[in-house]
Amino acid sequence: MGGSAWVVRLASLLALGLVLGAVEASLGDVDPRYRTCVKDCQTTGIIGENIISHCQNKENDTSVGGSWYNQEQIYMQWKELSCWTDCRYFCMMQREGERQSLGLTPVKYHGKWPFLHISVFQEPLSAALSAINLLMHFTGWLSFFFLVKYKLPLRPQTKRTYYEYTSLWHIYAILSMNAWFWSSIFHTRDIDLTEKLDYSSAVALLGYSLILSLLRAFNVKDEAPRVMFAAPILAFVTTHILYLNFYELDYGWNMKVCVVMAAVQLLTWAIWAGVTQHPSRLKLWTAVFGGALAMFLELYDFPPYMGYADAHSLWHASTIPLTYLWWSFIKSDAEFRTSTLIKKAK
Image (cartoon, rainbow, N blue to C red; front, side, top):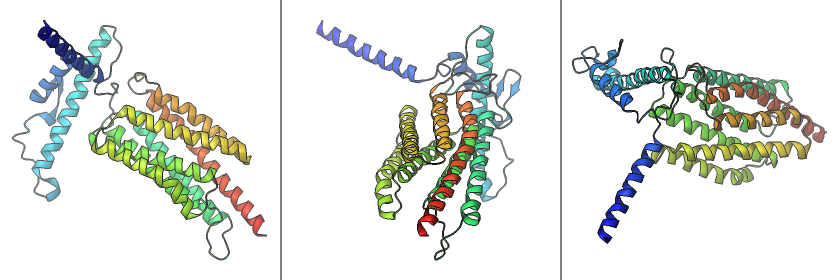
């Protein structure tokens, strides 16, 4: 009897493990009809009326040149990747069409909603909005650069800017443009490499932004105290990025880390603006409040409207005006600090 009970418990645990494993997968992934479709597509290269050229005649392909960067092995790996992704896309669209005809709601496939592709763009709206955010940061940084370099007075002895945080904002601009660049690439072509570069760049930007908010709020101007402020945060961010890239790309844990870092820096900016009575605090408060509202779009999830617009793409849209306002505050802060320091010098 005791042996039977032990077997029952073991079977129950195994069954529970299988159920939990299935729960972690997306509903679309475990659909037998979807899986069968993908398997057949990779074998035949045909889905209904669609012919996937990447999946056909791969063994007999001789169209590859002899250059070192165009070797057959690399070319064949790319064809395998294109075959796999194209089969998943067309099978997903076919299955969603069947579900829609039955009155069922969309489900996720491989952790993502079913988006309609445009040419090579897998998530065209998010890719386009990411590119616009990149452009907004570039123009914002460029106007900041011209302001501190050519419009505001420079220190007579060193010809350096009076504004103590100039170099820090330059680094912020580089990290911001890098993050939005990889975001646009990832939403164009979702593969393991672009996903990790997108996530790593976003984490690096959030970590640096947190450091910058603390340095400005506590008015840390000397190099040694700046290093002391930054060191523990840099160590944590670096460890987190290594964890995502080389151990496990844990989406839930990464979301928690990003939300906490974003919330702390938004709270830091909001409190600092009120305590110091900064002349541009209304700009800052508007950007902080807007950023807090935009965070809810990252936390709230719904299927893409018309196959294109989901919560994540709307978050990308909301950050465009916030980026313009944010760089406007940065320029106002540079003007304010420069004016204050010149008055003290006199």
